[in-house]
Amino acid sequence: MIFNYLTIGQRVRDARRKKRFSQAELAHRVGVTTCYISYIESGYKCMSLETLIRVANALEVTADVFLADCLDKHLVASEAEFSLILEDCSLYESRVILDNARELKRILRENLFTKANRE
Image (cartoon, rainbow, N blue to C red; front, side, top):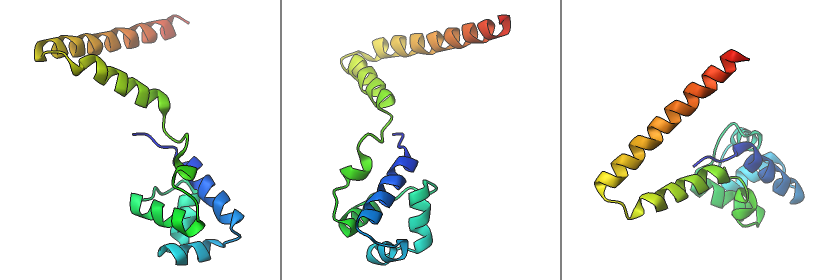
């Protein structure tokens, strides 16, 4: 999955400021370093699930406050849709569909490259 860590970090910072906590105070409550909180808030580091829950608990918010709308929805929808297409296929049918998808991707990129060179 693809997450927008910058958005998650900004939401952590907003929740922290709303509680009037310094980064040092939040770090102490979560059991991490102040530097680590800074990295999270700036999007340089991603938290483990355990740390995410500890941060949410320390700030008295639910984890979805940080995660809502942070997934690349297009990618997730595409993966789910492709899985549904292949769900009831035989091995042979799955192979043919995947081979066609690979070839279609190659053709699309080749045409994109050709079009870019013409312009």
